[in-house]
Image 1 (cartoon, rainbow, N blue to C red):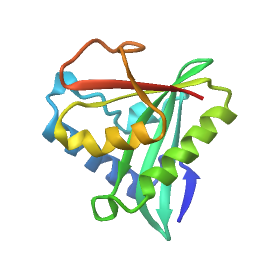
Image 2 (tube, rainbow, N blue to C red):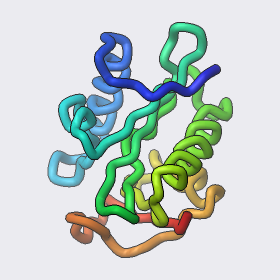
Image 3 (cartoon, rainbow, N blue to C red):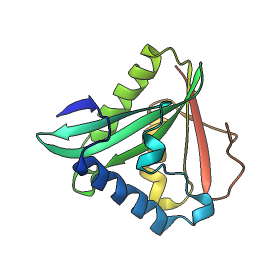
Length: 151
């Protein structure tokens, strides 16, 4: 497996991300959905990575610059067939290292509060993220939890 910085131009990553957005829409009402679509991920403040197994996308994740010291983790996803195989840990470790390299001193995230998101919350806790108040433009939402860590 390899992790690549992805320019989001390929059809395979577009389909992978569409599945992510579709899944989030099926679980979360529109007013509580914060997953970025392809256009939202193509903005200059976002850096995006894909995890490739051969020529197949098996995971992805991104960071969005909020200010010179603070970034947000976005679009973490592992393919359904590869969940619980270490891909998310591999990618999160990579992203944390890249965020440090880019000069960020804080990394935060928003994820769901439903049981569906419990494995994600446990992963983030394992990597040192702690629960926090909403950050950036987020507002309190019973369907969201917010986490942060210093880098």
